[in-house]
Length: 40
Image (cartoon, rainbow, N blue to C red; front, side, top):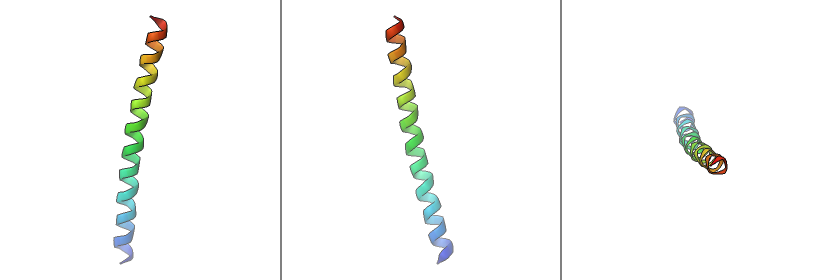
């Protein structure tokens, strides 16, 4: 029971991390485009 709970928690954390990474990558790209727009 405990092991299963740990596994579930680990999966949930992994999923959340993936979402956060995706969000940060999108934000980074947006920043790059904004800066490029300012430079142009």
